[in-house]
Image (cartoon, rainbow over all chains, first blue to last red):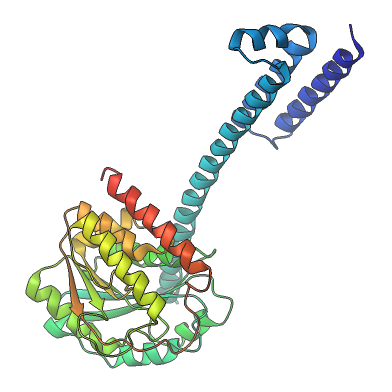
Length: 117
Length: 237
């Protein structure tokens, strides 16, 4: 096994452990962790199967194997960023509804307090 | 039985101009025997807008976070819906919309039965007419609105508006956050509401700053154009 393979495998294991720790501590929700787990799984696969990258490049008709890595990952990152924008938009909407509801309730509450005094 | 009218005043840092607006509102009587209530929606101002408003008889709602003009107006609309108001009228807290013009909006609503009445600066060339660049922008939105709603609304960015019960219902469920004026017209017209414009006289703002300045205006045009387009495509629920 080549040196680089051992390094990537160790890095991968550490990364998975860190993600697990975040989930256990409640700092990362499982649905957002899925994408990271899948990414490490793919990295792990190619760390063990060294020729795999060449095989995949030939299969998809990419001349230089590293280009496949860049293309694949940039695409995946873009999709994930879009997903994060969707999440942010949803949070924005929920936040607005909550703020409106709270302020309206507070007004009602104050009115009742004044009436009872 | 006389109906109830709610004046919704969305405010962000308007302590300078708000007292005179509230004062004028207290002396205003409405046509058709309508009863007038005033609601100040304080959009998390950094100055003493809330305290200033509480000195008057107006009801004050303090938003815990800054939602922007659309979110603030919608809060007022929700209040109108929940408290059974027949009409809600948005009136800016910066003194641009003189309360004595309220009567025109209400009478026009009563005469025509329009669900949304917009107070327009441009139907008659009178009073404050805004800057050149802004008038160009407004022309552009007139053009966009004509394409998307088939209506000829001259002052689609005017925030001086009357909503009747059916418009309140729709705006409570769906009102854009940021720069809501032109976009909401697309929403209303798609929901089959009748939109009309009546000439009013506006003044230049007495205090505070416009929410649209400098480079913001380009962003404004792009954002609103996109928002209108997507509101136009979106199915109404």
